Amino acid sequence: MRRFLILLSALAVAGTTLAPECAAMGLTELPGADGCPITVYYPSDAPEQTIERGPRALRLSVAPEGAPRAGNGRLVVISHGSGGAAWVHADMARRLVDDGYVVAVPEHRADNWHDDRDAGPDSWARRPAEVSHAIDAIGADPRFAPLLALDKVGVYGVSAGGHTALVLAGGRWSRAGFKTHCDADLAADFASCVGLATELTGGWLDGPRQWLARRIIDARFADTAPISYEDRRVAAVAAAVPAAADFDMASLATPRVPLGLVTAGADRWLVPRFHADRVLRACQPCELLVALPDAGHGAALSPLPARLPGLLGRLLNDPPGFDRAASTRRIDDAVAAFFDRHLPAAAR
Image (cartoon, rainbow, N blue to C red; front, side):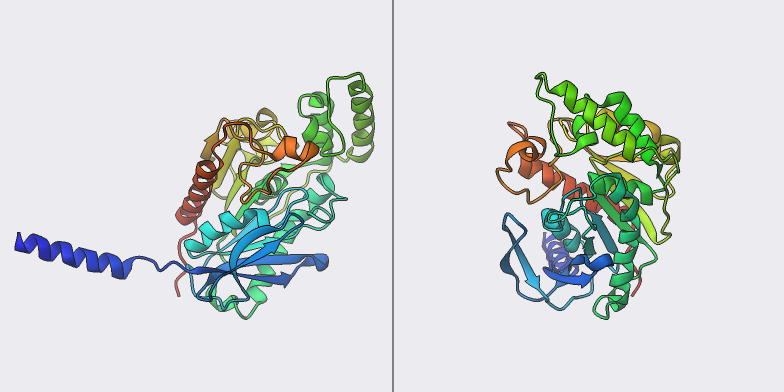
């Protein structure tokens, strides 16, 4: 018994000594492409305080401009959705920071919370390069450069950000692919093709709405040129509820890096059978990280602004009975574990 107690005591001391110390989450902004900022979350020893960010005053606990501390030496870039912002990914960022990652969220030009004039394929064509610019900016910053090895970077994207993630995993798409999808399945996937401009209500105006949508899409998205992009520093990619109907699925059959997916079965903005489910069918080596059959399109956004109004609310607010706290925790844990598997800690 005495030997057992001594061994138990030794294990308790070792566990206390070896357990990772939980850091505070620092927050800063770097200048990004075309004047759009890059929000950076990172491990810090500075004290946290409550701040408010965004048009709906989301409350975040962070250490603004706190001095960075060493983590695991790895960077994850998050690509936000259409009309999105860095703040609705703060809980995911905190989970990653707890594992030692630095997290950068570039604001995508003309497709963000205060300027969404290019939402859709025009923005999608620019976004992967904006991710690369964010990696460059982190690597050039004297606070972060000594703490990171940028040879293996993770990318996580949600919705339109998921589209960005799929491109960086090796996916190839075209504007004409978007047009072809909307020509074939406009009514069934109307929000994907039209966004927040209008919606189908079941009334007599649905016919004119679809006629006008087809005319606009046919005029703007006829270009058949394939679009792809590569950044060899990106070594692992996770995509939640990604926009994917415009991809050549052959290009995603064997992604060039590990690719994980999060799906939401009750998604009304990007109907799964046209988007995430197509990727899963095409991609044999893909990892299904989390499948939430009762989740809507906003499940991966956390914190989600409360009581979103109108069409935006109907597309993003949680379905009745959805357990947001448990589900977003599952997503955050699964994505963090995915990057832990595929982005080994950098030697320092």
